[in-house]
Amino acid sequence: MRCPSCRSTSFKDLTGAQRMVVAGRTFEANLPKLQCRACRTQIIHTDVVKAFEWEIAQVLARNGPVSAASFRFLRRQLGLTHEALADLLGVAADGTISRWENGHVEIARATWFALASLVLDQAEGHTAVRDRLRALRRPPPKAIVRLDRSRGTSRRPKLR
Image (cartoon, rainbow, N blue to C red; front, side, top):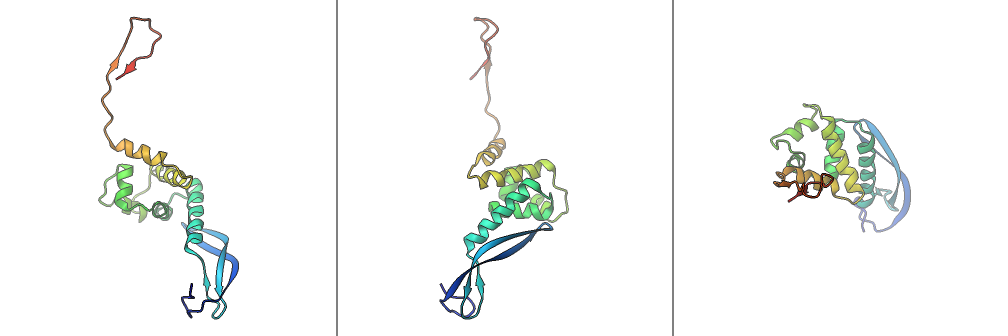
């Protein structure tokens, strides 16, 4: 690895405070860094930054605030385009997400809850929320309910 500033290959390990402001909230963590011995440029590994951002996303998903900025941050953490999120949420792909993220339209609590649940689910390595949202896009299968009363009334109807 070379320093992006001076091209040196000599570094020392550091730990230092890193701040990020999202939706008016300041998040701070001590992160491992490398410091160039020649020019003192500090470098944080991409994976470390991504892990910090996921921690922030989980805090926002649990505690808010419900805002355009936090909504955008959570969508980006999920790696979803406007169109992909609109499809999951069952809203029009013609700018609905953009209007929410730019603060032109208020974000409904149910919408926020769905997005926050997607973040928390993915952070835990699960896909249940995403799977349920995808299933809601499809029409339900037709079910035929047959009641079998020949053996008494305590039996549940059978779905076929």
